[in-house]
Image (cartoon, rainbow, N blue to C red):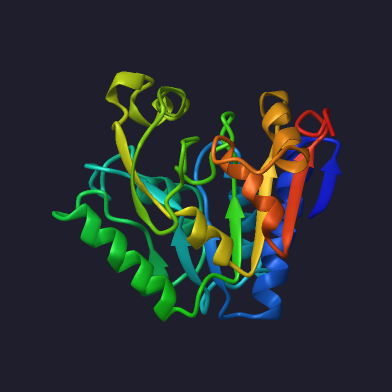
Length: 242
């Protein structure tokens, strides 16, 4: 596990943008896994800026998002597809047919999860998977539990996770769906390289446990320890307990 610590959240975000830009330059047809939430917004903004400057080319890349809310149409203001259009896709030259996001409004959500797994396999797997981490140690929407699903699946969201996503639904946690679709831990761990960005003191405890603690399904991020290629990009606040 390679751990890089930066003086500020903005510096960490720029470093993650550097990492993605390097992956695109080295392999233009790279398959990227992408997160949502507050943490990657600055990194996505930097990638948009670099694309506008002619420094980053997404034209041959393929993307798969980590998760989506169940029961939410892709056009909904709170959907992660809308989030991605706002923060990344709308500002770079990625082809529409190379964008993959789970459809939370699919008539059969279990079938949608299987379709997504098949699409990842057909793309040859994920080369570089960007991750955020929840304050409870979740990756994607893999919440702490007695057991973790390996493949893309439906999951019931923890109340803390619903609160953390309330801004997408008018600031009201009660409006956040109770279920979501998420890549499973097995799917995540199959990616060739994992890049996790974490900022802020609120993430410090779960980062410390993910790096130094025991493997446990009650902290899904602890499974990063078993992966062959993990890069952590942290600001000083998130790294304060390491």
